Length: 127
Image 1 (cartoon, rainbow, N blue to C red):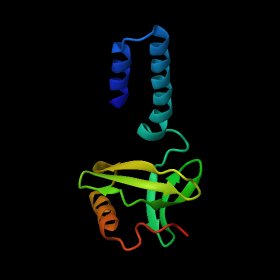
Image 2: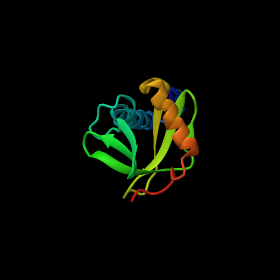
Image 3: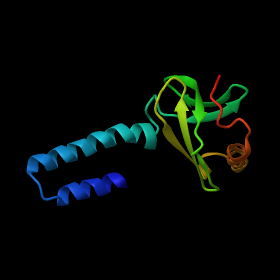
Image 4: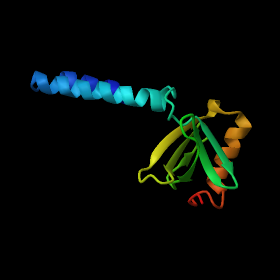
């Protein structure tokens, strides 16, 4: 949705046609990057699984398998959606992952929300 607003803003912008073209090209490149990785989840590096074990929180991607992650305190657990903010071990930047309620069984989603809200070691770095 934000991409559509950006495209509309660029089209309505009063500037040189070359600047409009570059802006639209950047929007298309960004959409080509984001869609398979974060929306459609078809890219091999897209995270499609989440688990908690004795080793801590882990995310699954077909390219790299299970990867240890450290959840960030600004993660959000609501009844309709869980927004996980995490850092993959060995990487400096923080990423986000949305888990809607219908992506999991109701009791699994509830347990995830409870573990995020009340877990003792939920922000601990993976060993």
